[in-house]
Image (cartoon, rainbow, N blue to C red; front, side, top):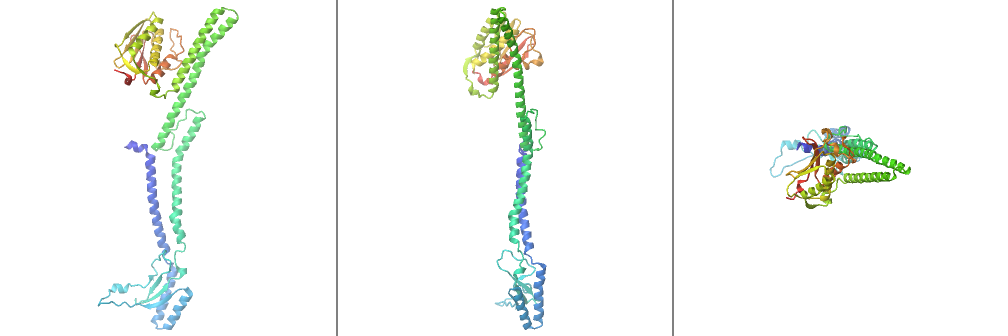
Length: 451
């Protein structure tokens, strides 16, 4: 579970950021909208003092009993403020022998108290109430238009509901963009360096992000870079080796031609030219085959033609041909009477024949072919063997171990065998024989055995 979370750490972090950011944004907008609305709904202190002053002056005139002056004062307020105003007495009479609670009598209002907030959504100005000291008489005035709060409420509301989220989300997107683009830019720069020929470019240990997704991308890039670098280096080495191998027969052909032109054993020189041309043709054909096998390493298993055949009969027929060409070698076999497999007899036959012919060139007197119960083929000779540290190298193209025996080949045989066996989903390896010589082991795919 921990590995899975680590692998998708960027996804988890992104989810937490988006969920947390969305919840925070909704909370912030609601808090800010409510706070702003409350602040903008309050009457300004100056206007509260003005309305309270109107009420206090009206109360003085009322208590003095000067109703004419009170009427004139209220009319002047209505004229000056372009609104409605009045002084009223409140009479609440309970019916059906009911009684009034003192609390109700003390806190009854005919309009809004000047300290209360004004609802900004109303399309009319409310009636404001300034009670007199007797709590029965009230100065009422419809809030003058110039005193109404929230003149910029619509713009402020739109800013809070739309502009603020846009700014917040834009900043959030920038953070996510930078978090994504920083490692991608590093990958882009590494790719450009690699494309320019710096094949040793690697990024896994240098990428800034610790998220599992980007670490996986970096690891994949390094894996691709290793593969491409190995392929290019192999191709360069392959070309160099091929050039080196082809140079010798070409030099011999040129020497033979020069001798033939000078009438020095022309018949022998023609035979030498024919022999070297055949060697160069063989080298070219083997090289093309090896290149094709390497390029077609991704060929599907079903693309290879297969049939059922007896592996023991195939080995016996190949040994008979090789023994005819090497009569000084004693061939012995340890195989079951029959061993049916479902594979490609032509390809497998080429591999076995190539290994047997190679063994016949290095064997002193004996070659032993053994089939194990698991279906592995072991071909052992009694030659000089191969140094332990070179056992893997003998399957490389153009590689030849220095020995006293003179090899007539170009070092492509075992490389071709390895590619062929891999195509058949098998494996090939070599080890030294404790009693002397080399043992080549062919491991067949167990699913191909038809027992």
